[in-house]
Length: 121
Image 1 (cartoon, rainbow, N blue to C red):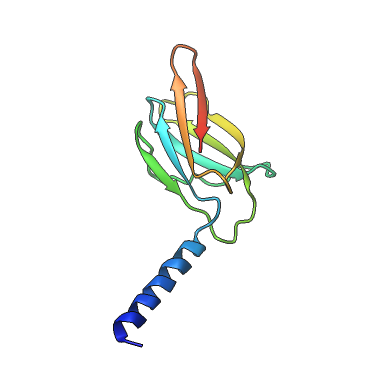
Image 2 (image 1 turned 120 degrees about the horizontal axis):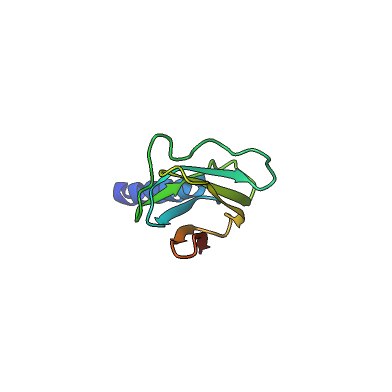
């Protein structure tokens, strides 16, 4: 086997292995609310407590997106989502996202009705 072919094979296996390392629950969160999100929490639906803020010290400005990654050892598929707003208004929560089949969640807000919702795909 040529060195080039061997190198290509090693790179292909590394790429496949890298994809397998990602958690099935990984998703992209998109902020289309018109407001800045100060904190994002995800927690298994079966849990009674929120996990730590996945943004850390960052914020998610309107129009921005963040990739939320899970450990490959994570097995739960149903997750809840909570966001804290930068302006101090009440947090918004959503329940029961099947993150094993959802890859993108977009949060939106309607000022006229004062309602926020999440669309997913």
